[in-house]
Image 1 (cartoon, one colour):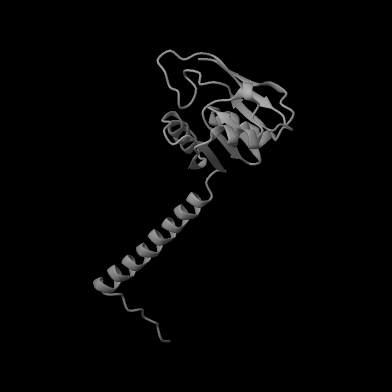
Image 2 (tube, rainbow, N blue to C red):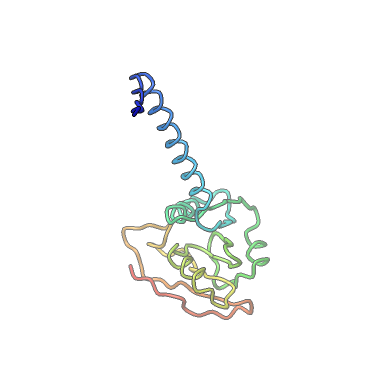
Length: 164
């Protein structure tokens, strides 16, 4: 009876095989990270005055919550708001779109996530004005404010109340 013997790899062969396997694992992990980055949350297109600083802070708030934000500098924000149907009484400094909805002002990411999950029959959400303590308007003295849902006819209702 013959016994098959296996030849043990040399140290160099073993280290070479281990390095190759490690490279494949790292490449696979990086490919997974890239796929995850591309599969990030919904894209928000934000129209803003090029000189506004709080708009950029709001965009960072959304990015931290997993949204992809594309910032577009606009010279005539009034025209953007009219085109997207933002009621004048609900205006703020920046206007965005996401998932077929209009987002006006410093709306919290959690409210946008809820909007996209529940899909109510509204045109969008607004945080009228620029309340201290809203995302992008951080303040040592935050105030309570409402996130308002509005429809295409301009009717509005409270979507959620935010406490300081």
